[in-house]
Image (cartoon, rainbow, N blue to C red; front, side, top):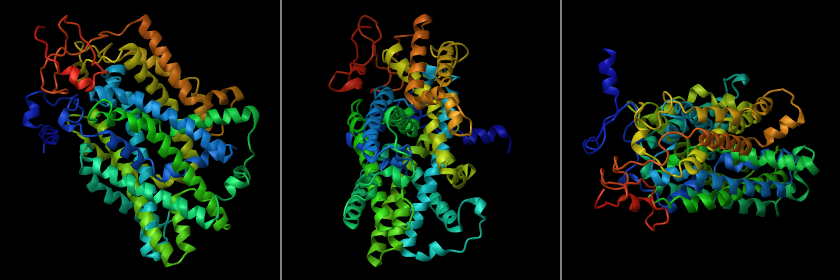
Length: 563
């Protein structure tokens, strides 16, 4: 078949009622257009459930282990976790604001900040992270599935292994990884607007399971165990930090904790664009990262501490799937039954974080990279299909290095986030001309200079520069002076601030075109019926009245008698 007809057949189809308002193009399809009210189904409880469903998982459970390895005590670690999670919640609110008011996601936001063509740079960065994290979480999911199957068929643990040690896995690991990946595929077919009920179910089940394991650990060990009573540093094998070293360990811990979730912070608007009202995400963003994130880490620490007392011959157990396997190996039939249910819930929770947090994220980003040929569903399937190419078993073989790399990616994402927040809140004062985000020509105020906003590019480089040597040192044997190490300890907040401030100054010196402009009409029917005017009687464009009880939507649906 000739290439042109084949490409034509691969194009994303468009619904008839949507074609009356806008047409698919190189820059636009129904999954990256500003969402209409009919697709905005996530309410307050949806967002609260989302944060719980994507937070109680293998990564969240074991998050405190890296902080304890800095030489912090359990108390210091939990205090640091509280501070970091408060900051994460605030960042979620900042990066989710544009999505909840204007109902567009991260890729479209960056067309405004970087320019229509340069926006592909932060977009590709985020896509690569979606691929990498999807593969990683799928591997963790396979390990949980292995324990679930092992509770019914213990022979899976003794399955003959024909793989060499250099592959960093066994036959049973590989089998369960593929089972988890294949079982994920049907769930990718579900559009994000229908995730409300699954979020509630997964969050409820994972919360009950996490607290059940906490109660078991405290009861079985008759207390919280030696990590809390005799000092974590001794058991972990590191020297406790004091004085200035303690302060810098805190800075490093806060920055690395934010860095571990920085990809989710960056594209928060991909999820808030589904909000029923601008305020729908607020309660979940303000409370759930703090409550869920802190409690999950604390339960992980207590369970690991109790396991030291209960299973003294085992190494420190930081992951829930290893803990459950150990419980089964040292218990009877009752233990197998408990492991069956707990492993099932952790397997489902891995589907929760991987599908909602990585596959759909990758799908949304790929939609804006190739909107003519990809929608969210196709992009999510592409993300899943590429899993083997990232060899998660090899990535996680050097777990500490991998975690350092992924947390250190804040070196590049922190400045991008600082640019986005500064541009929207400080430079544009919350005003967006939606229609100009969906074509790339000099007629668009976001075209800048051949589609590139030099202010963003230079400000990003200025934010990356000071922390980049520390990033290289963290993933290699490079030795740096103490001063350079301390700069990297401040990686995320420092790079965020430098890029944001630089961008703001550049915009003061050389203001971008079109500041203060919004569309005269609701071009895409984002706030109700398409083509309603959104200017006031003085013909001055305006942003939504965010203090109105119905939020941005009500203000933008005002039909002015005389324009």
